[in-house]
Image (cartoon, rainbow, N blue to C red):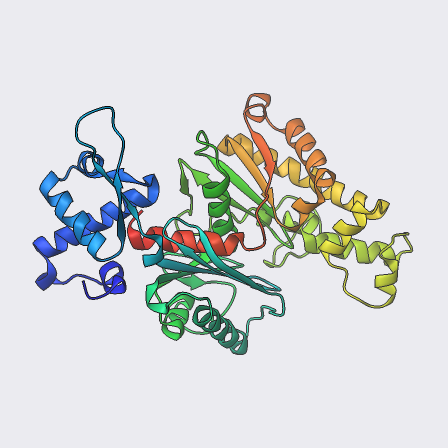
Length: 409
């Protein structure tokens, strides 16, 4: 094998077909099986992959020689010959994940078992739909990979998540950097020199939430992201749900209210216009302007931007106006969540994003409204939990998704 990159990313032609090509496919299946199930014996691989013992033995030894699989020695058994146990050598292969947020970029390197090797966050970044911003995104990614402590040749792929509508199959972003006919994925791929998967940020975070926090019973999960925007990620039968064009989850753009507020999508009355972080910020500024008392008035008087994080901090400091605005948003989004759980009947609804940090101020009215407006049989079977993942969850999910794509999961 000339290189790991060629092994996983190379496209076979007619000359490569035959025994060699077939063996490479079996090797990928061995790696995928170990990635999901962990350490195993040759007999377990033979049984699960339906491959003969001699072939499995030969190919596993080749993977050991290539430093992708490690021979972990004999395993104790009740009697008879003790078989050898094999597992992935995580230091052989790595994946990178990057999230391009509105006001930060997060970076991550993971190994074959999804363990985090390195992570960073750049809070000086600000997303804008300009060529200079795309240049910075690519240069930032290159700088991180060059300085992450992992040889670039061992990083087999890069997952990039970004806000807005994304078609992960075609690699197009439909909100940012649309002036070029080439998909954003291909542009980043060319400038970074790695195989790239482009994903929506909420869907990437949903996958990280589902993969790292699920119980064994959970196969149908909704992830509700309440940040400066509102969106959902959907897991059906253990798989991310994309829809026909990859746009499933645009929950914030349901025309839920009869108001005249124009949403960022250009339509009126969307859920986002009342319950998003941006909507709460706008309401706070409007009410302060009308003379309503709040501890954030000093910030307003200094003409400083009031961020949703400021409002959450003020609520935790017993600011009545902040508490009222967050509770109002929780109640309104809870009514919309009732529609979701009546439709999908999930085991779990995970709430994440900036507003999740408000804790009971948002969760109690959200759950109360969901209970009020959903079917009782559905509500009682649905668990709610607040995300415990960090800002880097979308980058982590992106790294997991490019890993799955490359090793064939």
